[in-house]
Amino acid sequence: MHGFPLVGVSVGLVERGEAVLGVVLAPFLDQIYRGARGLGAEARGPSGSAEPLRVSERDPEEAVVGTGFPFRREGRIPRYLDMFGRCLERFEDLRRPGAASLDLAWVAAGVFDGFFELGLAQWDVAAGSALILEAGGRVSDWNGGVHYLSGNILAGPPQVHAELVRLAGEASRPVL
Image (cartoon, rainbow, N blue to C red; front, top):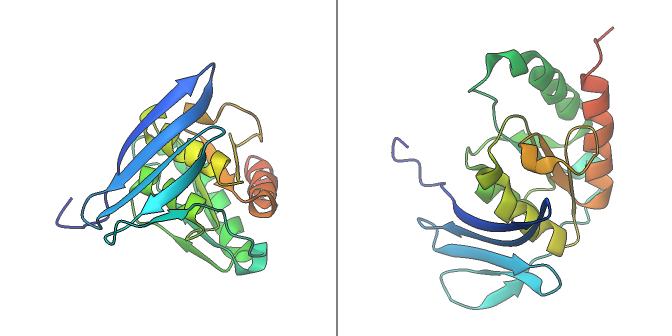
């Protein structure tokens, strides 16, 4: 869009409500991320060599968390902005590249330390979620439950994911 080269093309397989296989291609970066339940996950870059995917081990205070804006449904904006503010206070930084499938692949690769968004489509989150799960991370909905394919998603390594779940719980309540 507008010549911005950070786009992701993704294909995911969902079985019984769980993402079990994912492939995310970043065509303008010449990168591909792929993984399947029980088989591991890897990234291949321009050199063609494969590197195993592993979520980061950074502490939440040092975490860089990706996000996207819920631009399709204005009713989600107040809750999102509350979460955004809480995350800015808790983590090192927030980033918004704009390609959720690629953002999730970057969580699996340890580039980002977490991700949150509201209102994505299943096809936006299925592939990246499979990669994160296989790379040792956690994925949930904003209540900490298993319904992340609803598009209301929190993802990251266990310690950052736990903080995202806590902050999302606080963001659903009025701010005092």
